[in-house]
Length: 72
Image (cartoon, rainbow, N blue to C red):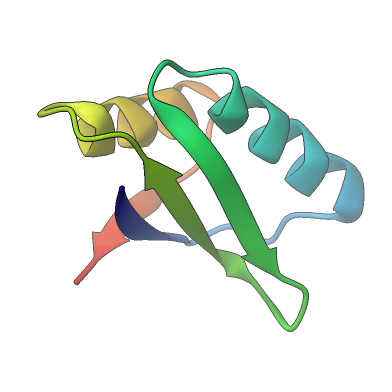
């Protein structure tokens, strides 16, 4: 499994966090999404190895009006 940390520059409430998590989990190759309650702007996404998953995640979040960055 691979994982990527995505920082969202937007503040999200509990409902929005659930919607984002559910949308990410619905994507092909995504196996888990973790959101730290103490730092809701960082999403740790675990996925099966596939070359374009990180960019797919970013594009999906941008389509939802969010401003994400992949954090090294």
